Structures are given as structure tokens and as C-alpha cells.
Image (cartoon, rainbow, N blue to C red; front, side):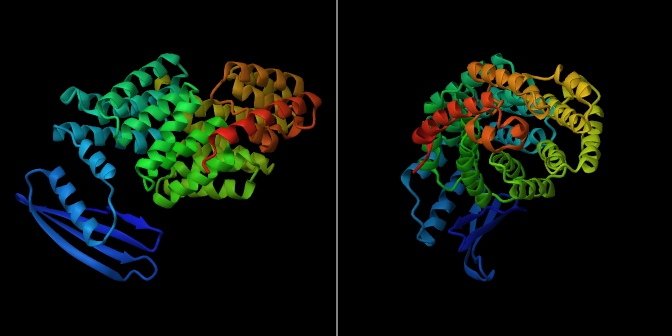
Length: 423
């Protein structure tokens, strides 16, 4: 039995259902549940011959919508029809790719899981070369490879190539729009990425993935209050997807909100105990509150997990560097500055900055921040809120050079709000 498709409206009721298959027939059961007390408001069975599952999906969805007097716009119906593949096998491989991407790679951050997702996605377009969803998810996989594994610009070129193909094949399909939004965001074409972000919400204001990408847009442009707002909306639509909690935790970190930071980290790990981002954030929390004993304990667990990987290709490059950075900060807190600086030498600039800031090396940290800003390093997060509120810069925040940088960033921050805040 397949179960669990759900539609929520103002959290007052939920539409739940199940699908049962027997031979060449299928029975679809739908029921409207009162969210406040669990009582059944409406229920109906639909029996159909299992010939074309996508036509059945369209037909039954329309009947249910009409029965519930829910207005389903022509654009949404048209979009749903256009996402249908010509080949059910291509669709199956697309779903496998999406599962490997969201529920394996995002957990492990291991290259082998990324490669598995890519394999399935490539199979989908091998079977159906005109399948927009297959091209779209390949684009997003290359963005993720750049961000989490390689920092290689060639991966962004691949992402752009497949995003353009997906958009050409299916310009009104949400997954194509997501691929365009994501690819443009990594290129720092913020205006165009914002255009696609808004278009996604217009196409479907109740889709979790649309808000998931929108909140990530706000991470990159450095607007944490907006990021928290839309991460919260994504959570309302899908409260069981662990990664959006760790994203919201980053927003909490950016504005110095310690209480909500640990709340969101714990929620992430309660759903997915192996989530790498959640584990790194959990270890950092104890540094934040200066509980060095627990910081050491959870950092050691993190390091052991990373070192247990058998080949370098399976290591979590970004999060491995993050763990090294936290270890360097821990060493600095113990007064072992030489050890902290030794670790810093092996790290990318955006992590080295945090170690210099911890050591109170304001001039060196500001120089690196300025270099990072000039090169538009995507993940150094040198935005105004993060610089002015996050605990990483506590030890240098009052330094004149740092204050001058803050004033410069405040001008940029105000402009970002003017251009990209959704009213």
C-alpha cells in the first residue's frame, strides 16, 4: 500500500489518502480530516482500471478538488500534466535520483551517494532525452557537488548547462524553475535567481521545495531574518524534512539567537541522527556556550566518523574542514594558539577567517574578509548580520578595522533588503 499524500489549508484540515493495487485495478481512498480533533469530515473511494497512472492521477485529483470546492487553477493543472514523462521507467529513475539526493547524500555528504543520485538521473534522460525533470535534477546535483564536494567552477558550468536544457524542455515545470533558480544563485546572478524564486511561489505557494530554495536564496544574499521566515514556512509544509531545520539553525546562528539555534539543531538530529550539518552545529553549540568538555566530546565523535571513511573520495570535504575549524577554535580556547594556527594553514579562507577572529587577530581577519568579498566567495558569509551578530567575530567586533568593514557591509545589506525582501 502507498499512503500519505496530504494537502493542508490554514492548518484547519488535512486531506489524506491511500492507494491500493490489485491485479489490473487500483483503489484510491481520500478523506478530509479535522486537524483539531482528528474527526472525519469527508471520505470517498475511487476505483479505476490501472492503464495510465498519470491520467488517473489527473482525473482523481480534479474530482477531489471539485468535491471539496477547492479552486485548482489552470496553471497548476497544466503544470502537473507537463511533468508527466513519456516513459514510466524514466520517471522511476528520476524518483530514485531524488531520493538518493535528498535522503542519502544530504545525510552523508559522501561522494558515493552523490554519484548514486547522478547515476539514476542520467538513466532517466538516457531513456527519455526530452525529460525535463531528469535534466533539472542533474543540474541541482552539480550545484550540490560544487557546494559540498569540490568548489570546482566546472561543476557550475555543468549545472548551468542542464538547467538551461530543463528550462527549454519544460519552462513551466517547477523542477525546471528550481534548477534555474539554483544555478543562477551559485553564479551570483541574484536578480535572475530572485525572479525564479518568486515565480516558483506564484506557481505553487504551498510547495515545500519552493520555500526550501527561497530560504537558501536568503542564506546566500545574507538576509537571515528572511531566511528564518521562509525556512519556517517550509517546515510548516513539511515538518519531517530534517535539513531545513539545520538551515534555520544557520539563520539563528547568523543573528546570535543561541536558544533557537540549539532548538533547531536538536530537531534536525531528532529526525535524522546522522545528519552531518546537524552534528557539526551540535558540536559548535558547546563552543558557543564555552562548555569545552562537551565540545571536545562531540568534536571527537565527529572526527572519528569522518576518519572512518575508507577513501578520500568519500570524505565530506566541506564538513571535514568545518570540523577542523571547530577543533582549532577549541585549541585556541585552551590557550594553544600555535596549534590553532597550524590547523588554519590547511583550511580554505572562509574557515581561516574564523580562526583568526577567535585568536583576536583582527587585522589579518579583516584583510581576509576583504579579499573574500572581492572574490565573492559564496560560502564565507561575510554579510552584515553574520558579521555583526554571530559569535564567530566576538573577539574582534570592536576593533576599528572591523567596525569600518561593518559600516561598508551595512550599506550593501540595506540595498539587499530593498531589492530582495518580498513585501
